[in-house]
Every structure is written in structure tokens, then in C-alpha cells.
Length: 364
Image 1 (cartoon, rainbow, N blue to C red):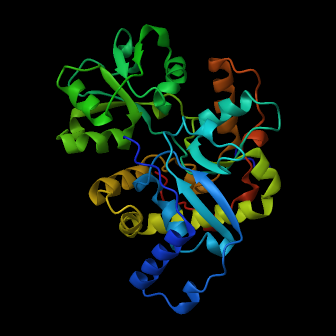
Image 2: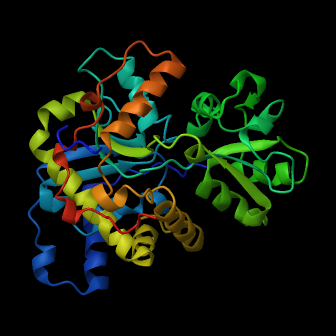
Image 3: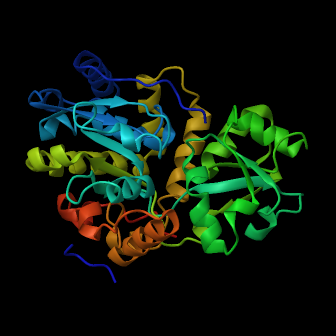
């Protein structure tokens, strides 16, 4: 029961005050906004946020919150930078570098469990209420269930979140991960999928469902040619991407964190309401982006990673304490972590906006 107490990465980009104002002016002109919207008080605090990847469809709600002034209305100037992956970026969010990050909560829990109590980062807004981690295999091939991976070679980037949590997947599916050859030296993801389907690559490819499809599509790969072995099928307790802050920011900036979450939540709500308008925001911020691919990735993210049934009752942003506790315990057991953090040390829901303001329409 819910407890209320408690792909290739794109180039990294940081958004300066001048760029933010420029894009804001463009947005106001496009939307026909009045002067009252343009006359937002100057931001008084700058926060640096490291995203899991470069500017793209799945993270566009951050850009929407920025361009529509939701962050500045909360007294915040935000500099967004693209990161190297949902798991790989977690150790990079440290005091003096980035105040906040958007990445995989399993990697965050592992970092907290390896830190002294009360010193690790804290999650404050979790968007993925299920995980997109998967292994793509040939739909015509012999790999149909997890145990069929035994004796096969699966490739991925060494920092890929699915690769890094393969031990959890194997444990939950009941086989020894050591009986599978895991190759972390993959080059381009789309090329790896194409080569697999042509019989001249690995037997499977680690990744996120939508990223795998989007990366392979320009190479002529039909999504129907791929079968996915999804983590969510055997690990229902797993959550995915979360907004988190350093312990120092958590202690120093508590009054601002509710405003940060409120603005990002509003950007997400707008994105869900009109995905195409959100992609138009992306194109203004990153003009070289492919609109069709990014819209496909965004719509896939909304339909998969944010579609757990619990979203209907607690909304996007919150987590169920029992699910989170099970995830923490499994991570500690399988990865032999030095200690078991409490749920309250991992996630603080006190910054969330009221339930009626959270997205609840995506649940399946």
C-alpha cells in the first residue's frame, strides 16, 4: 500500500541566460502571449541539471518548463546539460558540478548504499514508474524467453543501464548471468540491431525499447522484426528515471526544490497534453533534431515508461513505498551492497505538487 508519510547520446548543451531569454521571446511570439507572461521576475538562483542524455523527445518536458517560464516563475534559472546515459550520469552529479540530475533510480540507490548514511543524493520526482530496459533479439530467432539467453552473446554500451542491471534481470528470471556472454564494447546502437538481424552481430542488444527502435529505424529496420525481453516482465518493482539532487542541495535549497518540482511537473503536464507542441520546443532549442524520430521517442516514453497502473492513483512523480522497498532490497542482495538504505533516505515526496496537479492520464 502506498504510504503518504514517508542512442547515441546527443551532444551536451548548457543553456545560458541569454539563450533562455531568446527562446522565451520566440515562444511568446509563437503562442501569442501577452506582456504579462513576458514580464516574469528575474530568477534569483541558478541550478545545473545533468540529464540522462542529450536534448531529445524523452526529456523535452524540461525544455517546455524552461521555455514557458515555469522555472523562472519559481525564482530559478536552470542550465541543462546532456549526460552519457541514465546510469552513467548518476556519479557525475556532485556538489560543485551539478546540483541536480535526471537518471536511473537503481544506479542512484546503489550510490546511496555505498555512501555513509545521510550523505547520498535524494530523489524528489520520479517520472518512469516502470523501466524501459530490454534486450532486443531477432523476432524470427530462437530466443523467446529469458533462459534462452544462456550461451548467447549480448552486446551494449558498457554504461548502458540495462547492461548494468542484467544481474537483477537474470536473478529475477531464475538463471545465472555468468552463463551469458555480456559484451560492453558495442559501437552504434542502430548498427548493432541491424547487424544482429542480418546474422553478423551479437545475439541480442541491450538498451531502452524506444531508443533501440529509434536508432535502428533510419537504417531500415522494421520494429516488427525485433522481439523484446523486457525487465518489467520479471521485475515489476523497478522504477526508472528520477529527478534527484545532491545531499548538499537538499539541505541548503529545500525552499526552492518544491518550486523546481512544480515547474518540471507543469512542463510534463503540458507535454502530455500536446506532444507535437513539445517537439516544436525541442526544435527551437536544438534545431538539428529530427522531429519525427523525437516525436516517436516521446510518445513511446509516455506510453511505456510512464504507463504503470499506479500512476492513476498516485500520479507521475510519486512512488509506492512497498515497490521501492522491494527494489532496494533486491539491489542490495544481488549486487551485495554494503548497507540497505531506508525508503525515506532514497526518496522524499514532500516536494510533490498536490495529486490533482500530477499527470494521471497515462496509466494503462
